[in-house]
Length: 292
Image 1 (cartoon, rainbow, N blue to C red):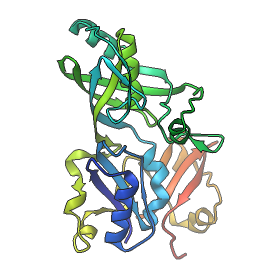
Image 2: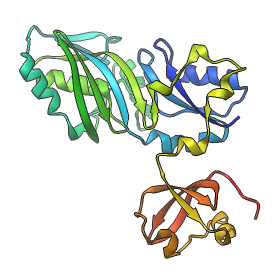
Image 3: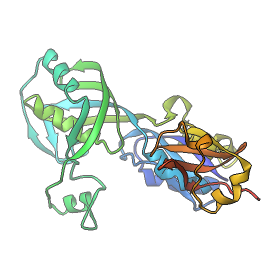
């Protein structure tokens, strides 16, 4: 059983719990998720099964869309509603300023990850240190907020939708918005609406999956990667490309961009992911092997 399941993770379970349940349903150990969702967050969580685990990193690199609810006037140690309240404020920003401040986060920004995160420092996950009462300095990271759409402002709650790059912490975004408004902010609710090409509309709920129907919800590796443009390689290059030899042929590479990924086909057979470097086609991940 190989492919990707566009899973809708419910609140109340970890991403690891979701993977464990899929392992049981598929009766295989080769299962992996494509980007952690906190236990109290819900939404799209693509799960790779079998040989599709080879493309986890490629799916994880895509943009994400989240719907979140920010609560103003309160700050917790985890930046979400599950944490301990550490600061409160009675300051009430006006609606016009709320909109202006939230929109100011659109673009490339520096974001400091929260202490309660799975990022590692010297081999230790930050949340493990945080649970010991240890807080360390975190370096800001470049992220991209492509768009923010405010849905409702009903103080102290603000509902908005964020389209962002991989590695964005919505908890940190809520925290930073609160501070910029002269108060505090905590992420109150979070739902992931999309992860790359995997959308809420095409997702399946965990409770709907059974050993009998799960194969019906598997998306092929080829289809899961269809956000990459297609390259067709003549059959004469089969042995070379399958042996890792880079192909320099302008009829293949001439009009292609360098350093971006492509789906590679030998005639009509999908074989994997490649890129163009110095006008040569180089395979990055071989996913199907032809008999040549």
